[in-house]
Image (tube, rainbow, N blue to C red; front, side, top):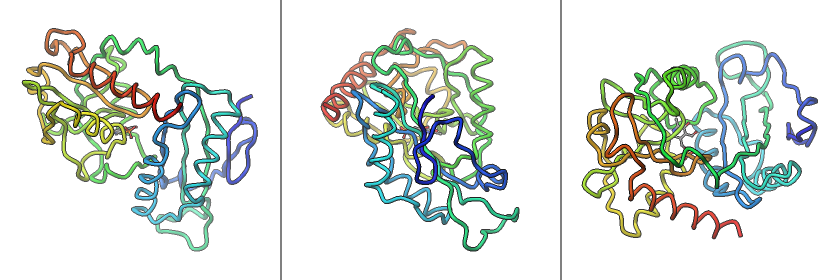
Amino acid sequence: MATCWLNGKFLPEDQAHVSIFDRGLLFGDGVYEVAAVFNGKLLDADLHLARLEKSLAAICIPNPQPTSAWLEIMQSLAEQNGIAEGLVYLQVTSGAAERDFAFPANVTPTAFAFARKKSLTNDPNAKGIVLHAVQDIRWARRDIKSVAMLAQVLAKQEAKAAGAFEAIMHDRGVVTEGGSSNLWIVQNGTAVTRPLSHSILAGITRDVTLELAAMGVPVMERAFTLDDVRAADEAFMTSATNFILPAIRLDDAAIGNGAPGPITMRLRDAYFVRAHAKTT
Ligand code: PLP
């Protein structure tokens, strides 16, 4: 039985229970983070925990653990569950209280975390993924990593039913982001991704990719359209537990020559080199 962590205790997952009055369940009043585990070590968990602070502050939940404690909990979960490659998920909700929309007084946040194995090195998706276009029907504060994700559940289900790996969410043809990733295109050697705003999540992998691109790939942060994706030389997605994955098709349209692009794969390779350097 896998070990998880709930409100200060490590325990078997089948003994971890939360109240039916938890506001995370009743209202989606909570935020979360997912960090990769690589070579048995957390990757960029400090950056994920900094974003957790911002998400919590935005919805007025006090952080129940200092960053150093979160780091210990997350690393310990990876170790207790024997994870060499995978992820740690953590969630903080505003806690259990009588059902009322406005913030309750004196409520203790609920916090939990668990770990899962996931192969990052031998990922068949590195051969190229398919994107499926879905209208972005989410709220206006997508920068908050909220657990209220019904729009993404529907988008990713629609993508899956269409035989695609990821939803490419758009607002009247202008791409926002992936169902659970940031999206990029390559046009004439320049990597293009949407600038940060309330319209997208500030992806940690997006940030790291910008840092890696500084080694010699020109970058432009600007919005792009579905037509731009169809006409691009390359496209790729970034997320903490997929790293950098080439996109080779948007629905029926091949992207570039329909194979992973060279700039994408250079960045993906650089991502692995950095990940190894940070975890060994
Ligand atoms: N955008 C959305 C909507 C996401 O859900 C995610 C990750 O889950 C990302 C972007 C990528 O963020 P990160 O690179 O921090 O995993």
